[in-house]
Each structure stands twice: as C-alpha cells, then as structure tokens.
Image (cartoon, helix red, strand yellow):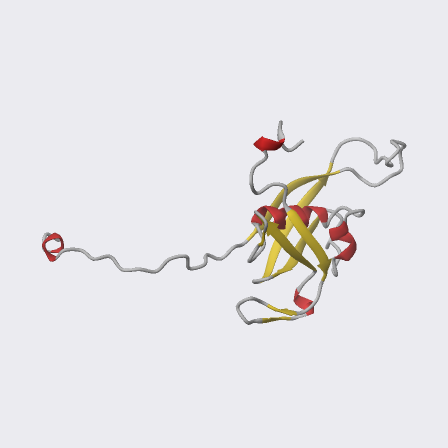
Length: 153
C-alpha cells in the first residue's frame, strides 16, 4: 500500500485527478486555449483543493498512462501515440497546456492476457518522461540596505 498505517499517509496522497476529453477553454490567466492544442483535460486535487495548474508528477503519470490501452487517459486522449513507444501528450489544465513527453520500452517475456495466457497486450515499462515548466513569479519585494554598507563597495 501507500503507507504502513493510515496515520503515516502523506497529507498530499493519494493524488485525485479528474480525466476528461480535449476541449477548448479559457485558462486562469484569461488566455483562450483551442481544443486542437489539447489531447486530454486533467483537473487535480491537491490537499483537498483544486490545483491551480497540474502537478508535475501527475502530468508524467498521465503521459505514461496514455500509452496503455486500457487506461482512462488513453481512452479519452484526442491524439494517439506517435509510435507504440513514444508520444508527447498535451494536457489541458486550469492555467493552460503542459506538453509531456514519454518513452516506453517493451519489457521481457511474451505478451500476456489478464488471465496470464499468451497473446495479450505488450508489457511496457517507462524509460523516461519529460516536461518543460516555466517559473512563475512567487515574490517581489525591496531590500533596504544602509548607505554605510554600500559605501564599502
């Protein structure tokens, strides 16, 4: 499980995410986001509140899930993976769109069905995920320095 006891579960766990199909929307900063620029829409809940963007860990997990045929993310994503092992997923979230890359590899063994017999979907393993985040302004202020401190420079 996620922890050895209910008391030891981290405050921000588990991650709760609403998954929806692509669609146009107005981002929190007022920008219009076109449906064609989004593959899937996600809304995350973080510590009981709606997240203002999309947590990086959630974005990377969603990109990996988009590669697996029986997941909700794969089912609702507008564009399917470029190849069977790589893709860039464009996630619509309250602040705009985040593009997340994912590369998978086939793991050892013959593909199996849920019952364990051969002939099912390929077993895949995440090689890496990547995303670009831009820094947002989190503080602006002034520092008052006595003139005698500055005179020594």
